Every structure is written in C-alpha cells, then in structure tokens.
Image (cartoon, rainbow, N blue to C red; front, side, top):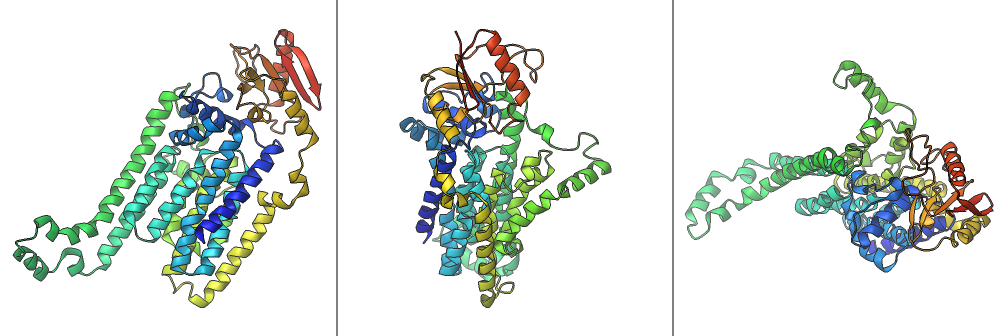
Length: 504
C-alpha cells in the first residue's frame, strides 16, 4: 500500500506542478533562483545566483548544500521541469513510511486514510504547487525519522534526521528537538523499568562476575543498551543546536555579500530589550496575534481531528512554529506558506501514535469517527488548494499571454545575458544568464539611477506580472526601462504588455 500511495501522489504532484508552470505561475523568486544554483552545481561551479544580485553566492542566503544532489539529474535534463519533478518525487516519498507504519500498527483502513490524508494535505500540496524550495528534502527525511521515532528505533531516527543540517539552517533546531525526544523517551523507559531491569539485580551482577568466560563489556551490555537512547539523544540535540549556531553565525555571514545573516531583522524585539519584561510580553503577544496565526494552528491540528495533539511527536513542530510565529514577516504566518510542508508528516505521525499507543484516548470503536473527520477535512481542503487544478478545464489550456511570452522569448539566443521581470525569469534561467529588470546602480539601491555595472544584452519586462511589490516594484521597473532606452537599447518587440529590448 505504501508504494502505491506514493506513486499516485508523485503523478498527481508532477502533473499539478507542470500545469502551473506551463501557465507561467512560477517565478524567478524562487524557481529561477534555485535553477541558477543547481545549474551552477551541475557544471562544477559555486552556486552564484544573479537573480539575487550581481555575483550573489546563494549559500550566503540559506545554507542548503543538499541541493547538489539534484545536479546530476539537471546535467542530463537541463530544465526547470527537472526541479519540479524532483520536488514532486521527494514530497510524495514522505507518504511511504507513514502509510506503512499506520498499516502495520493500526490497520489497512488507517493506513489508507493516513497515506491519502498526508498526500492530499493542504501543507504538502501548497508546497508542491509553488515554485521549488529546498525544504522538499526535509519532508521525506522527517517522515522517515518520525516513523522510526514512533517505532522506538532511535538510531534509525537519528540517522534520517542528521541530513537536516544540510537542508536549511533552522532545521538544526528540529534535529535538536528529535534528539531531545530520543533522550526523553530513553529516560522514561529507564524510569518505568524496575531496578532489576535498569541497573541489574544483585544476583545478576554476581552471576556476571562468575561468568569468567564472558568479556567484561558484554556483561554490562544490557545496562549500556538501555542508556544508549539517552546518550544518543543528548548527542543529537547538541549537534542540532551547534550546527544551527555555526551555520547562522559563521558560515552564512562568511558567504553573504553583506557579511551577515539576512533574516535577523525579521525577528521582533528591536523596540524594547528582548530580556526585559516588556520585551517578553511583546513577544508573547506577537506569537498570538494577529488572528491569522490562530488559523494556521487550527489548520495544522484539524487534519488529525485534533487527536494528534495528544502525541508528544507533535511537539517536534515547535521549533519551526516558534520562529515563524515570532517573525515579523506576515507570509510566514499564512497557511499557503511552503514551510507548512515539513509539518505535515509530524502531525500525521502524532495521529498514528495516538491510535496505536493510546487506546484509552481513542478506543477501537472511536477510530472510525476520527478517521472519517480526517478524511472529510482533507477532502474539503483539497477542493481549495491546487489539487483542484486537475479537474479544471482552464488549467489544461495555455493562456494566450503565455504563448505570446514564449514566442517573444525565443528571440533571445542561448547563452545571452538578460534582465527580466519576475514571472518571465524561470522561462530563461535554463539557457541564459538572468538578472532582475529592476537591478541597477546608484547611491540608493531602492531607487537606481544607472544601469548595472555589467549591462545585459537583452531586457524583457511583462507589464502584467502580478508580483508588483517584490522583488521588483512597478516604479523601479519603469525607472529602469526608461534608463535602458535612454542608454541606447532598442525596442525589438512590444506585444500583450511584454516589452523586449536589445542593446545596440
């Protein structure tokens, strides 16, 4: 059942991703950025990404060297489609371990509901349907790790979680939480065992001494084995915290053109001292307000009929939720943010854990209602999130505006340099060097007064690009187009709001 569910959702994710890409719903931020990085890896170069700025090394933005694993596939199939298919495969793979665990621990019906519920969950679908992001690697890693945690396979859980350090800098905190969970469960097991099982009875110790033919370390093996989860958990927790600290405080600033970590300013507490009572109160209120954050928490708990909250596995969501709710960026609070994808395996693991280990909370006769609620919630959200594209006739047709863009962009030769608007960029990143049309130079970066230091050969801008605020505001785009024309760029074409300029 596990592989079947995985295969089905891989196909669905791939089709949805490609349909949206064919309708020009992806953008330079972020699909184009990651394609430029992986394209560089594929050719043995450092991941310099012109869409982020001239000579910008992407490892100074976020720490995600795991992206190099896609480079061999991109070398064979150099296209943004390769990234989208890889993301679909990785996201779908998360269904396998949880479906199999639910099937074996609770039953086939639970396995089917959990597998389909996770695959069609709003968090995974939103992550798959929007561009490409490095967290697609974290989703299956967490799914396999949390499954091993639920099955009390501590070493396996730690092994699956360790690569999180190479996915993104904040995921070291999630690794630390996994280590803390392992240590806590190890202590609970030891505490609930009898003194004879934890430390060995006096008679067993005497018998061990009398076994002269056995090595000394083997006589103490049962004790050491019971201490193993605690020691392993502490080591994993330390490695997670230390890894995040090194990445944020050392590695990212060393590779960032500005010499720092770009996302500190998104955290609150600048107006008052973070350590003061006022600062703590402000942070507490910020976690709970505005109401959009309550909607996010509700959406996370509802797929498991709120019973997943009764499992300690759900606590592994806290590191990610903490920085998101504390951040000042409102996009982090919204249910359509791609980072919700890494939380989905954790909440569904909590549901399996409760159904399997807590019959006092959900007795067998009550499972049917819990599973029915979970399936109904998944069906409702699936109708809202992009899986519904599969049944919309308009999603299978290429808009006239997109056909015009494709025709005009063919006039740009391979290997050229292009300044592009956001939505047109991923249509060019596979064969040209692309920067943003609003990039220029001058005393104020927000209001450039001159062309880039290395002017592009081509300039293309879409007046109907919906990303009118970031990364390029309408005002900056218009200013740069005027500068390009004033510096001798000639208009090659202008059709359906798309302007194509070429340097003389």
